[in-house]
Image (cartoon, rainbow, N blue to C red; front, side):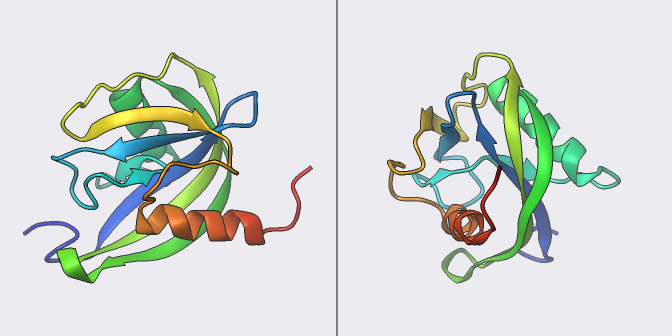
Length: 143
């Protein structure tokens, strides 16, 4: 059984901001589970018995060597990719970079990373990242 294909998968991600107000994005590599070549607010699959926040923090450490502080849930999205025959339920959090210099630790899954202004994001963005941006800009102003 393949999660996301034969049954609905649970993936978690985060819009991670640095002190300059830039957001972290990663470009999906050739061995990514879907949307290869697209830029995304990173994350990964939730393991059985793992809490969502723990999963997203683990993924950032494993894939980028970054520690993040999760501060709020941004949205939950039906991440449906008909062309790839995949269906994921995807909670995305707002988080802040706490420690670690971001680097690519899984080069087959990720080909590029960077910090970007919300007004100048790389393209193309993944389906879930487009949905995350819509949710982010639809929320009441943050103080």
